[in-house]
Image (cartoon, rainbow, N blue to C red; front, top):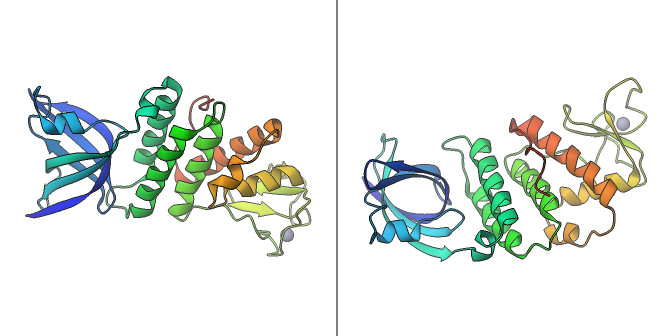
Length: 248
Ligand SMILES: [Zn+2]
């Protein structure tokens, strides 16, 4: 048995027995780890008071190799994200994001890049201006998929390998995993046509710097279409269903 101290979010919580809880943690160092918090539902439990959804936690647990559920011994709050809990829309978006991560991450997958993304995503969600939830959601889903090696190929044609023209038009093949130039795209295929403007927005959705997309303004119709393509791309490649109805 060893003692593991790491950072974590709670992906899912279940009641267990009279007073305990089982949490499915997304940890920074060990990926997804189920733990039991004994007595966490007792009124004075320090564990129960600290552990809550969407809080960034410093956790310590006893790790016994071969056991399915480890034992949580301590939890301290590093960030409580009160502004997410204060808004129903943000709360719902955060819930969808965590359900997505749960479906995306196989047990035992190396999770450090996904954990770092989860930290950033929740910090951004707290400061997000009104009306930007759908953008936030599609961007972070694409980023999570990219960190697992499921990124769209956007800089060169999947057919001929040539650099793609900035002004479009182009076609996106979700199943093939990226863009093709018009010379390579057969006209009878069901690939999605992209204008130059949509291509430009699509590259922002796959850019590692979120602040570039944050500055995008006034292209609502083009952006909605791109969001739909991004969500379909991630759903196809990561085998995770797109969110029902989006998140506003
Ligand atoms: Zn081509």
